[in-house]
Length: 102
Image (cartoon, rainbow, N blue to C red; front, side, top):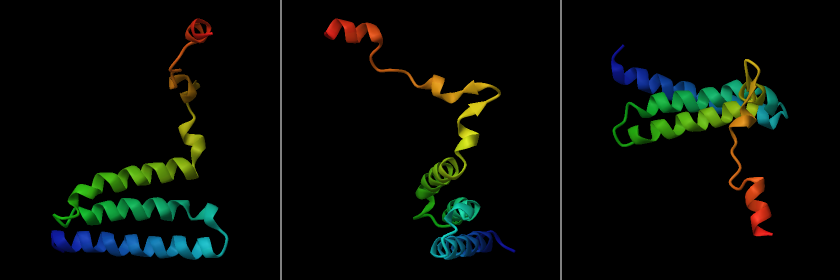
């Protein structure tokens, strides 16, 4: 199996994942289609690496896979070992700035 056929196989798996996601969406089971939607973007990214014109979009599709993963499974992206990720959000203006504006 040469390297070009690996990229074509990844594209075929991506298309199968997309069709599976579409069928489950049509059946009203979109909540269960998450792994196939994530797999679609991952395999699409791998398939893009085999084509020079599409290679630059591989990183973008990985970002879309990460976003899809966080939308389907948000519980894994809210806390880690007791540390809540909402602590990382910094306010642009602190409470002192609001007092100064008034």
